Image 1 (cartoon, rainbow, N blue to C red):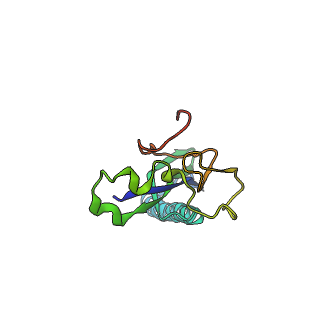
Image 2: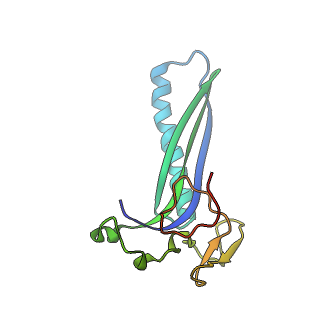
Image 3: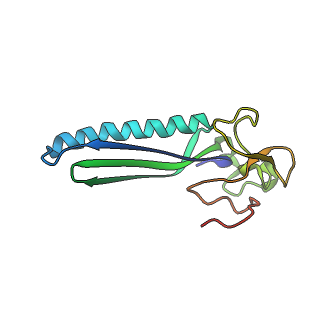
Amino acid sequence: AGVLCSVGGQVAARSVKVIGLESNEERVAGDRDAWWSEIREDIRAHARALDCSHVLGYTETTTIFEGVCVLSGAGTACVLDMGGLAAGPNLPASRLGRCSACHIPYSHRSPPFSMRLVLCELCGKKYVPDLILASIEMPPQVGVQGQGQ
């Protein structure tokens, strides 16, 4: 585990596969491993598009109904400081600041997709999205406005 530096946002991938009603379980199990590899690579590509190096809070689900298999993967793309491990889990807030986890990890001049960015109200130096979608709890020191549901 590292120290959370920045949250890029929610990343997800989904795939729908037809397996048929009379499928061989061994063949489907082998195919499913390859399908999960594709989903995981898509998740990594989405994280890289947000200039993030890690995905936290990652979950996978499989639903099979009437010969159709739906695979879904989702998590939160983040930037972690692996060098901060020497300081231990209680890294001083002054090292990163109360708001740094909310600062976007990519350039505000060329975001990876259309979104509304505003200057951080706490530091006034970096940009933050007006809405952060995440599958993780934000660190307690982060000044978040509103409540997550």
